[in-house]
Length: 405
Image (cartoon, rainbow, N blue to C red; front, side, top):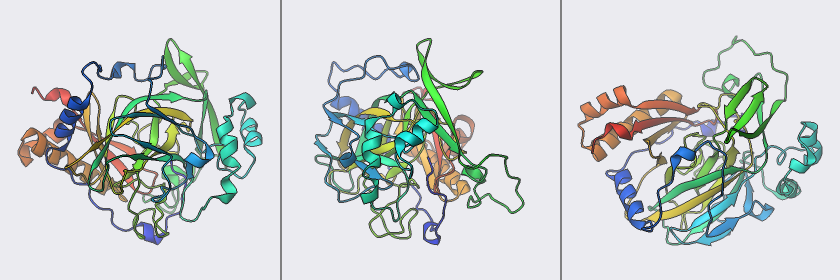
């Protein structure tokens, strides 16, 4: 979800390429498998998109109370809301920004959109009541839970985030758009004077009900359209190392939450759902894990600037990997290795994603660069994951089933 349309000159510096480390993903998969208890069955990805039956138990729980929430940034020196051991699990409540960040009182605002009073979380009201005391300069609009300190994590390590489950907290979400929002913004790199303007009234918001049909969760877009629910967290991050002039950093020490980066953040990659494992580089002791910007469903691109913005609960297993290093986010699930390219320019992001895929195939699968690029062109799908958050993300999905060993 993009919540800040302005682009400052200091935010258009060149974005560093995310290079893939030799042998990294394969080694992490083996390490994770060795660390799992012998009686622990692998996660069943066939259930993704179905209505949750019984949420998994977890070692810890982090509620979305005001003291556990941050508004539009990733503090690097905030006291952790939880300290946990590597390999433990945690359930985390998250809030959508809808109803929590506007000036209007949330009950009046949300019931005015047609949302019943009994479907408004108390957490939304409690957070809204604290908004006046929260700093705003250099921040965006996401509501983010954290940080969670993982014992033993040190700069240069890798934090593994195994996504065990994602569940909806309320049966509704909101999608917002405008005639000059998302890819149609005048600040969007592809904008040109004279472009046509869509006939969309200012402040248009669609409340989208969600529920269960034939054992699967869906979004009731209209009487004739149902969209399968595929909940995921738009933001998963570690505490960054912000430098003024980098994308989203206009205030010293403050990383705004709009643009994703090497620390993860507002990736808005819809593939990062239950059954997926995400890897992030560590920049600060304890890693300091953040999660938020919950989405019920999103198309690749998130072209209006928002998805189905819907409060969710996620259950994660966090592991620290020592003696390994990466420079940016990557992921995998049962079917694909997911390599990401991130840049202010979409063309550059695509180049970075292809480079990451080629590096992976060379280093992990033993191909020559020529064979790797050939395989990337005939077997790998490159998705435009998001294009509305200043830095843009292209994901290369390498199918695992093409490898016979």
